Image (tube, rainbow, N blue to C red):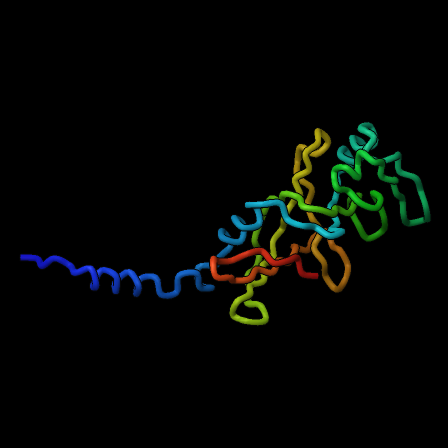
Length: 181
């Protein structure tokens, strides 16, 4: 014969089950991806790469001017207002050390997480650092494929480097805090 469980015993069991709820042990690549993709992320002059067809489409769509050679190892295309309206900033550049043209983005932009490559502890127990390859989703016919965001290594943007994100634990769970360079 089974005895009914008292309300106090049930509450105690639930309390024990929830010990550690919201702790760092529930933070993984899936959680990081979900948080990054859940809302536009504030980018502050982050670099994205373009494919040659995207570069050409941008010229044809008056997002930027035709590229011009500005030095022996640098070509650039000046942005138009239409390009700036899509949150592109500065100019599209092609230069030595980069395989593809690249341009800066500034503003709140939806990101797609392509791969989480590392998760490590931050400066204290309430922070995590996540390295992930991400791409920026730009709503325009030229950018059917999201634009890869360049990570920073040794103070320089690199095409093969993931972006580092800092997450912070708050009372209601993990939150994206900032991009770390």
